[in-house]
Length: 131
Image 1 (cartoon, rainbow, N blue to C red):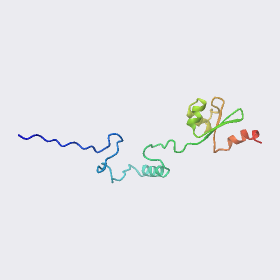
Image 2: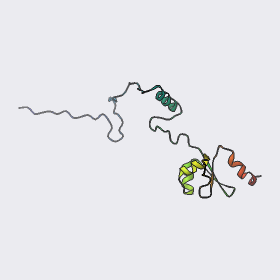
Image 3: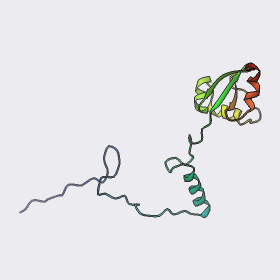
Image 4: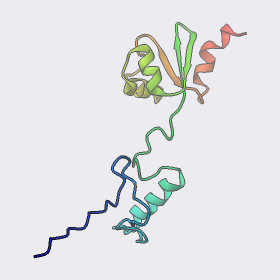
């Protein structure tokens, strides 16, 4: 009787990083994208041209805006994003976003007035301090 030989199983992916090893091809390489409508194809191409990859469909963080906080008619700070401004004053970022977008009923967050930096609305409030 001869012994049964079982060949070793070769992994296609690196067990640590998950990347394909050399010589192993992914199952969808060379295939074209299939869209269910022309509208979804146009939306996908538009988002890809804006720099939004498939790794995150909403593109959060791609279009973050800097925020200006004003309290008692004095400039308190300029923050690179709504998230950091929310952490600094201890409120939810959604409240700061609503104040910046001028949603009805939302005017201040812990006494701070919030504005997007690229709008000129906040400049008139602090202009007299710098003249």
